[in-house]
Length: 326
Ligand code: UDP
Ligand code: MG
Image (cartoon, rainbow, N blue to C red):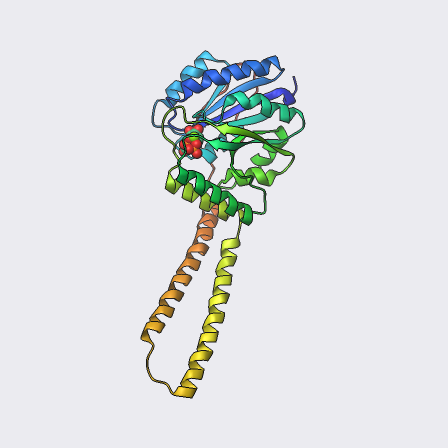
């Protein structure tokens, strides 16, 4: 069997003790279908430092299924890093990324595999509908995709998350990107190769709550913009040039007026308005620089992306190898 026929389903789970027991039988059924089709499939669950019974649940699942590998991180590192850790362990064949909450239906995996067999490297699921998500989340997501598509030089397809299959060479490419602030959607786009979308209806969460509240999504959006664009820095320059030109024109007007009508001390409100406005603009510009500087600082520390607490390979014939040096 060649690496072309191996597939590892990588699932990052954080406090998903109630969803996993429902999800795994669905995945197991899909793996049977794939096996009949000549694909040797495995699952790798990454426990992203869960505080609930997720790890115990996962051990139960692994005990009953020899195709299951487990990885436990030393603490909660966030979905992006947990996925990276999981993908690092896949040293042969392709990888399929899935959410642990059942929002990405595993039943569609054979469709992804079919595209992979047709020579595609990045087969990504594109949401046609989003069940159980608020109007606010949907509209802000819509806006975010439009903004990031404008700003980023690499393609970031709209309504596309982490639900995707990566061919071995795409996976190899992704593994070389070791940045700390990991905006995965952008990183996937950066790799390139042959890309194709699989439309799907995003299901509701099986159980539990979303971990991506407003602030987390906001920070995620900031990470996206700063990782893939320096346009905000340039914007600060343009605002500066614009206000400087305006100030110059205003100065000419004030001087002209003083020459013609004499200089009476007046205009305190105007002065305050100008000072406050410029102060605000300067602080915003400083904040923008700070955002980039902070990220530069994080990168410069060169810390490992994650630490592994437990690595438990699948007992079934090895698809997964020992962890590479991070
Ligand atoms: N997740 C994770 N680490 C985290 C937060 C989330 O591994 O710190 C996992 C979570 O278990 C799920 C996936 O990332 O499998 C997506 O999370 P969630 O469903 O909360 O996000 P949403 O679907 O609402 O965007
Ligand atoms: Mg979800």
